[in-house]
Amino acid sequence: MTMAEGSYSLTEESIRVAEEGIRGMINATSGATVTSFVMIGAALHILAAWVASSQTKSTPAERDADVEELEGLLPSFIEYHRAAKWLPDPHRADN
Image (tube, rainbow, N blue to C red; front, side):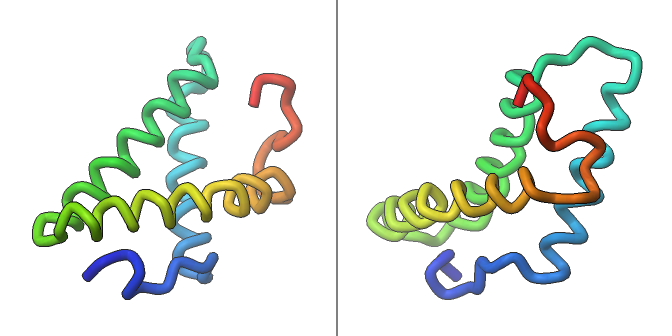
């Protein structure tokens, strides 16, 4: 299945998984000095690994289309999380 075949809106399930993952990342850095750059890199590696593993039977053209679709979705997902009330401080100066 390519990304174009799926639904990539912010469903309740995707929000729940995102919240759990973000809380885990926040809790993992309690007391430690971990920069935003490290956290962003870790999150991007997780996303990239998932996308790559889901594209084992995709053509190069389908993979390119998936990346373009992700690039288009990213700004709206970032904005959603900037406004999230459940984050400890979504308006930190380091994000």
